[in-house]
Amino acid sequence: MNDVQSGILESTPPVARYLIFSLTDQDEARRSLRLLSNIADGRQTVIGLGQSLVLTFGATIPGLRTAPSYAGAGYEVPSTPFALWCWLRGDDRGELLHRTRRIHEALAPAFCLEQVIDAFTYGAGRDLTGYEDGTENPKGERASEVAFIQGQGDGLDGSSFVAVQQWVHDLDRFDAKSTQEQDNTIGRRRSDNDEIEDAPPSAHVKRATQESFDPPAFMLRRSMPWADGSHAGLIFVAFGASFDAFEVLLKRMVGAEDGITDALFTFTRPISGAYFWCPGMQDGRLDLQLLGV
Figure 1 (cartoon, rainbow, N blue to C red):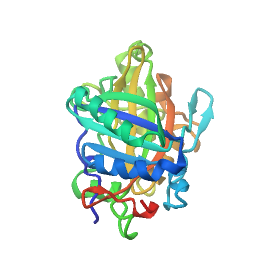
Figure 2: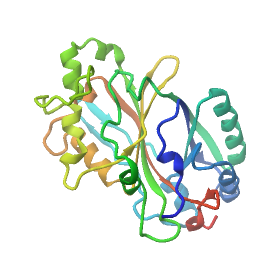
Figure 3: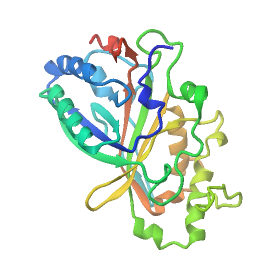
Figure 4: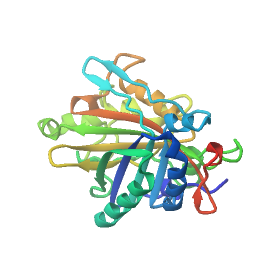
């Protein structure tokens, strides 16, 4: 396999920052991406390109598309496509700030920084509700098989797709539930992380168990809690060799098959949703040969 952006395989860092960019000057995009390629090491800084940016170069990445949107009684799942996504990983918020400045400078004026989201690890990889996150994540070689494209040729092998959503939690509403109601919402006991076999069909685990799909809908999740002055929640991040697993899972969460909506929607909601292609690495730089960069 070609070199990959290794940060995808590593555990979530103590702190992180997500940068979301729109494209504002197509003529300068090539130069800016070359500069970014010199900064992004694929480990501490993971990069994803949106479909609109790829099309700007007259290129096609098989499987790259716009995230779907859904709406129904009690839920809305928006699609908010952007040109470029940067996941800054580290253990020092000050260093992330200065890295943000370097990236911002490299990308201007071709790209406009639309959003900055600061995230962090809570406990031993828990969501802000206190429940463990990413329990079913594949490990070792299986993680690489799930996350990265293989056998498709130069420029594609070693690359990955990522689905990114920002969820806003109503923690007061969740805290108002009894312990049993909370456990039944998730489908696991917070006390020991054991799955509740007789949890209601709306429990998140019942909706989203990856082995329950045919074929199994495995993804490599790297989600992290986030918070600002007035809101908090989860940045859902899932890498895969395609978006298929994420999409079948999302369809079941919104009840597209059986009308049963995931109980997560009783206390949290996504306010964004976007797809990106994460190129592989070549000689320590982003492999952007398919874009002619």
